[in-house]
Amino acid sequence: MMRPPAQTDVHENGRAELAEFAASPGTCPFAGRDGGSERHEHAAFRPPLPLALDRHPSTIQRLRMRLRSSLDLFLHGSYGFVGVSRHRIPSVRSLKKRFMFTVRDPAVIREILVRRPKDFPKGELMHKMLGKLTGYSIFVSNGAAWERQRRIVDQAFTHAGVRDVFPLMRDASDACLARLKAQAAGGGPVSIDAEMTHYAGDVIFRTIYSEPMGGEAAGRIFSAFEVFQRLAFAQGVLALGGIPFWLMWTNPRSWRMAREIRDVLNGPLERRLTAVRAGEPVSSRDILSTLMTAVDPVTGTCFEGDELLDEIAVLFLAGHETSAAALGWALYCIANRPDIQQAMREEVRTVLGDGEPRFGDMKRLELTRNVFREALRLYPPVAYFSRDTTRDEQLAGVEIAAGSPLTVPVWLMHRHTEFWRDPNGFDPHRFASEETREAQRLTYMPFSMGARVCVGAAFAMQEATLVLAELVRAFEIRPVVGHVPQPVSRLTVRSENGIRLHLTPIEANSEPLASGAT
Image (cartoon, rainbow, N blue to C red; front, top):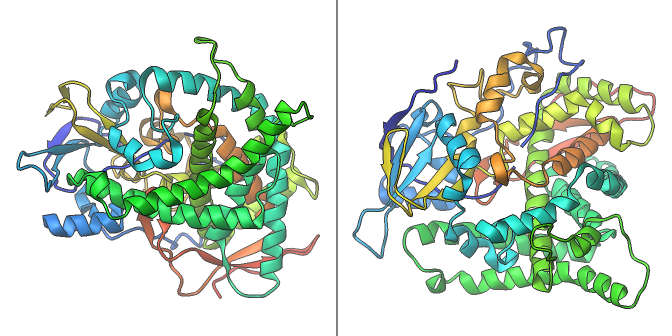
């Protein structure tokens, strides 16, 4: 199925977005005798995806569609094209033609992200979209500033660092389970996407500060972030069209939401700093303790002043929203595939029994990990990576002027018909198969790739594996009849109408009921 030769076209479906995320395949004893993909009685389930277009929309239609979701602009042919395509960017400020370039050639993607990342930095647009919240932190910075930040932040996400905070993850998982059991007792459907947002946010809060995210803090931060995300995305779309940020009517509200989030995050930071100054004992096994004491081995400097809050803000932004989005989709998919859900349950019982999950157990839950990997493939939290060119380039035979924006459409590469068998199907067993190893190497990039691969990739895999294992052990998870989530891409790929599921508690030493939509 591989066909890597470069092609070009002039599709007019322009777009731009952000961010970072990676994973590695494994073999799974629960995937069947050959470790590969099998046909199941429930294989008729097709995960929802936006309808592809038959023809190019007009400029006005394109703007309206982009403001709703970047995924709405794909043509049928977008999922099979290999090469670099050019898209005109309409502008209200200039008659001069401006172009954006979308890269769907694995060799060119590796050139941009792996071989020459310094020649393709993140653009200023991303900083303008997110800087109100994140400052000039690791998520939006470039050059020497980014290299220093990365060297410091890396020290908090070593294997030992993730192991040290695993008990805090487990506390967040226990709290999530308790909330869901209380909701399930009512008998109605559960808004699982909202619960996964709470869980992922609580994981980040606990692992940074060694304290839970209280109900008031959760309410303030999630409410503000929902508004901030929507406004930041709209501002990015309008800015591409040439409208300056200072003219946008949404800008003052965006600043207010960013301040609200930073105020919540700054509270426990200030408490920790005050305790340290007073000589009081504080935790030495959380992310904040590392960020406060880590020294850059090259410059000999550490984070000071607002830098600490900037990095905490970006860790919270990237660490909770992306994981929560993928977890919601993973649970929706296994709710519709009770065969896979039951295989996960058997794996969890074999590995964990009735005991408390331990850090070393997570790598043994191969099917559970592969379910999360497949959810990341189908619904990558960040649908696009955006970069700028620093000089004139020729990529796959296409001339690109210096300063042009580039996008790597992760969504398209993860569903590319040239590289993936049954690209729109939900099949976690593919990650235990040699058949798809090459597709994974060439096109699988939920955590990005190269120097800017997500610093928290292993962290995200641990928190996801943990909560998925706990949920299938505790509940039978079923879909809600008539409820089909509608994926949209703004800052992250979420369901526009939420994700609701039925959870039925499983009593100890009992088998789950036969699954089916109710």
